[in-house]
Length: 209
Image 1: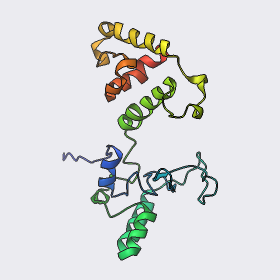
Image 2 (image 1 turned 135 degrees about the vertical axis):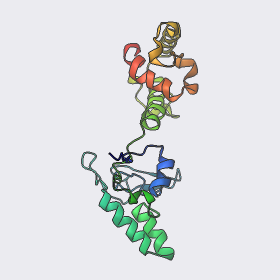
Image 3 (image 1 turned 45 degrees about the vertical axis):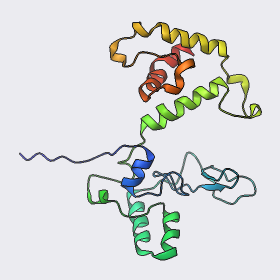
Image 4 (image 1 turned 90 degrees about the vertical axis):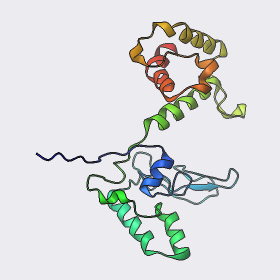
């Protein structure tokens, strides 16, 4: 028989996927590859944000987090066609509105469906993003202004010291199948790799917190 290989899924961080999908990237007004939520530019921080409800004194759509306007393969084809048929300043406007800047060669593969063939990258999305952010929340250093957070969920520094020491003491007790041995999270979290964050989330956080 003839063996055929088909590409079904492509993974990567957002900048990499933006290049292969020909999308406008995470700093654009239509940055999500899965839904059509439109961002709002914050003049103070000079950045585009994606609130479900527009801030006061700003216009914009209001979205339901449980029923977002999802993008389909057909939507992508239509958006690409609109951009392709535009020119000059009109093309620039359409690129901004449609969230794509060209036609990806991956459209030629029948096994690829936009955007479902480009799943969320768990390494960057969770282990190197959410996990360290939650650590900063629990440590009380996520916000620069002390008035911006509720101290009820802050874990005292003495507890973090104990957690870090416990992790360090058990380095030799962990099976090799667990991968990298635990590192003192209080002292060395800035040097954590994706595997360290994964082990923290999956193995150590529940029994230690």
